[in-house]
Amino acid sequence: MSERPRTALPWLALSACALAADFATKALVRARMVEGESTPLAPFFNLVSARNAGAAFSFLADAGGWQRHFFVALALVVSALLAWMLSAKRARLDAFAYSMILGGAVGNAIDRLAFGAVTDFLDFHWAGWHWPAFNVADVAICLGAACLVASSFKPSGAQPSASGAERAGRREPT
Image (tube, rainbow, N blue to C red; front, side):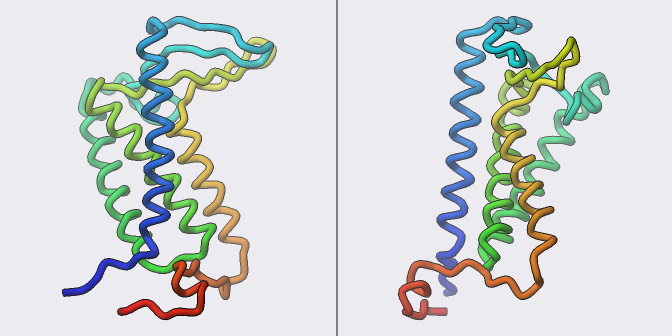
């Protein structure tokens, strides 16, 4: 019987933290705000309560309902792939990126399954122009994507992250 690699656990825990932050903030918005409500917090930022049945920038939001199942299936496939990828040694930046994308994808998939749409609440604006509202899961996904872009500029010989045993000079059983 093969032992599951230990290197994935800290990265999966990081994904769980992103997921927990997303879940908690969305639950707070749903509990405290009426859909469509907007609370100005700064001259450039509002806290809003919005639902998005589509993807980024409300892509496919009016597609008739099939997109909910498509986006959930896509998130589950991507999440399984990312979790599998995290089980191998990776450069820290790559592992961080995969963890953030995983946590965000699962967070938005849970919203789609439980509520039929994603809860968005962060609304940045300037001079009457509003960026589409988003949430913590979207931040995690974008942060992960930005880290992958940054990682692509690193030399290909970058070292994968080591487990605690390897950092201490001990070999892990294979």
